[in-house]
Image (cartoon, rainbow, N blue to C red; front, side):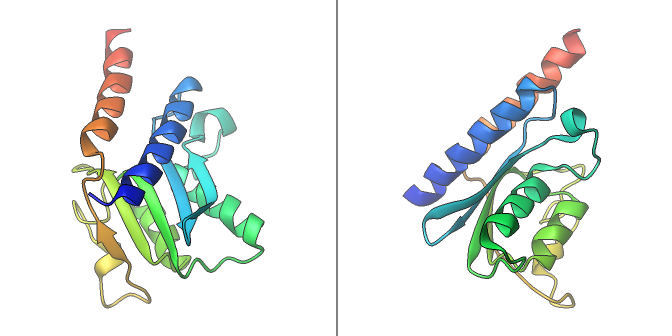
Length: 152
């Protein structure tokens, strides 16, 4: 495993843990350009009452604001859970160059599990994909979160 991939995925896991503190599904995303974090997001649907406030969208908004541009050419997204259709579409439209994924999502994953929006040559952009970076940690965070809710 690439040392930088592990380092930045750990930052995404920290963002995911913050999401859980406000009862949002613990998913985190970190956007990196040339070794520098340019955007961080955690799921905020519950706390913001916004169905689009997924970690990837929050991180893309932060990065676009800080860079004063929407294009993310040369940017790598580190996401603790395989993006859904909405988030894969946002990463696609932002032209993110690479996506590093922690845990896969067999139910709603749109970057290899159910669909593969970021590797479809019929679409306007393709991203390089890396899977299973700190996957056990990412999956455990989700299992613990949902396990606690089932026990309540």
